[in-house]
Length: 269
Picture 1 (cartoon, one colour):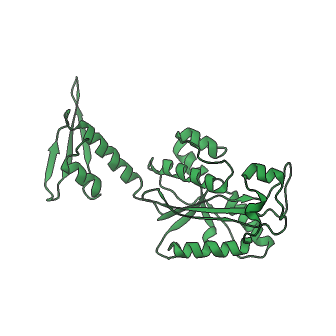
Picture 2: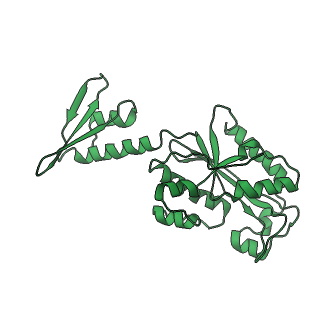
Picture 3: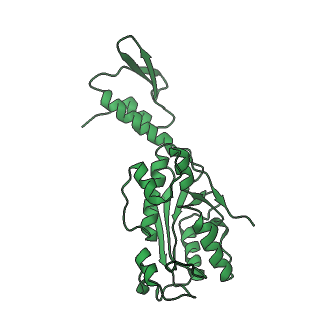
């Protein structure tokens, strides 16, 4: 077991006591000294050696990760990924949401704290096509007897309230893979059924755009992002809740690299 020097523990646990690295070179070797502030405010220096270099490296990495996730503009990210009715080789009208999952991700830890997950009964095309089941893994029994979209939106609103996400002092934003979910799918279904969607759905982060900012590569979909970030795909592709888990992992991967997230999409009145 590696024991961290007390000053490194202070640096990790207390963001006000930041660890700073100073390097200077000679012709043959790089010398390093680490300067830190103790609890008393005095300035002290330690030179790495074979006994403490591993501990110093661990502390530096921990402090870097803490800095990377400290300054987000939002308190929570709400990862969302709809699944909807569909047919093979064509478009269905109206297209209706059949799976409505949300993961609540803490912006400081980038860990999932809570989830909302509801299957939704489609009112117009109530029978799922074989193609839809093959694509999403959702079978007819999973949507039969489930609430319609209007009731589901009320359930989402209750969950948001229970999770303190409707508190004006709590900043949250939805995160999607693409713009389709909140720019096209939900607005079109709400328009068809004459439903007023809550305003918190009006802005979102399309995870592809911050991914492009970090990697300088615009991805075609979720799977290439996982591959480039070296992340393992979990669950079933095109399962709404599993897609949310993978998007949350991408979010965590980008946040761990120090990216500061901002809204990328917004509905215009």
